[in-house]
Image (cartoon, rainbow, N blue to C red; front, side, top):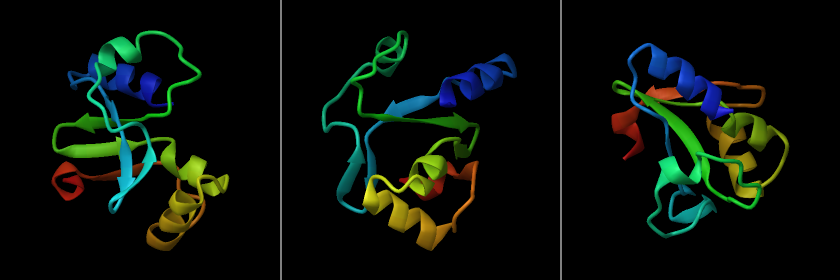
Length: 101
């Protein structure tokens, strides 16, 4: 879901989206603890990839799928965190990227 969003933002002059491991605190939700080439990894379909992609546009980070995944109930740590912090039914999460470090 982030790929078309990233592509549209690139046409407006944005940098490409980022992909990687997603953590809640020190617990890994998606991805592996290894360095990887996101551009190469995401250049073709890979149904086995367990990472997560998000978009950085200027000083903002946006995610178009994490809330849908959380609302579906799995993984449980993500579902509980999103429900507590954002509530159910959210679709686009956007936060200043400095808050994500």
